[in-house]
Length: 366
Image (cartoon, rainbow, N blue to C red; front, top):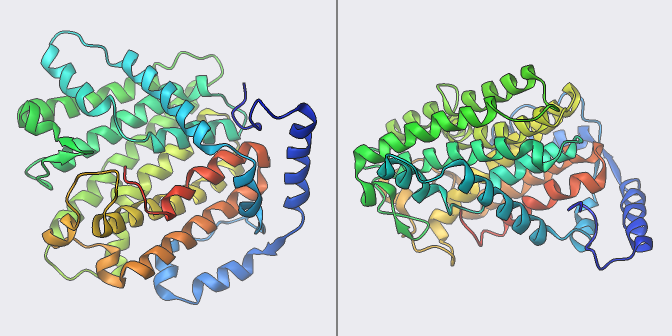
């Protein structure tokens, strides 16, 4: 069953209408990219936030978002992908000797968050003709690396948080030493998941490229760089460009890599990889902005105390430009990200178009 088609209750005739309506709608409203670029450059803060412009983007579908929400069942898609990812993770990290190490690994990994980045990875693979089965090992690796990052972030030497998603942080349950070793084990296992991928449809050079993509996102050009700058900036006045550097490396690059690696594994060409890299940059920055905002206004789904970053004197976008301006930037970034999807099959692009919509509602936290 293809998850990008209408629900099973819809007839074949309706399915054809679904595709025809999208294709017709796609040609109804095309606008020049130069206009979008002019709007972005009209505000210096937005120019810094948006990053470099897509090299080859010429037109966008400005009305896609008004039609697809009524046709694509995104909640069903997210739920099914999360279920499949959870099943694969459970199998990838079984309880074995030494039990305490694997219990610590599983404690934060299973169950985890909403599987946002791993679902984006699978959707990106499917976008260019790949399949869920091809991308699943990579999706698991992404969740392992993401979990490693959140475990580290909670440690006393970092943010010293006692809770994560409403339950005690990993180090509060297993102690710092076991937690650090669990992070090391998750990192190594993530690389194994990609390198040992059992599929004949992905060439070794693409597997290597995906490993490099993900490793770069958490190394000295990614998460590690963002974290060290984030720590060193606490209690200090930080410029918008400095904050942009922190956000890009601490969060944006990981989201970008999750999406790009999915396209690579799915067999995407260089044009498709470049377009989805631009998509990932915008989504990644919006994701970090959204988390900054939720830290201030809170979320009904979590029990963590709001305002933790503010209390620590961390650099955040709401602190620099305010909540409303931060929300506007996040929404503009997501609109810009969706422009890149106009060049793909609308039905295959529908999951990626919809998955990011929840970020501008600020009703959830991951």
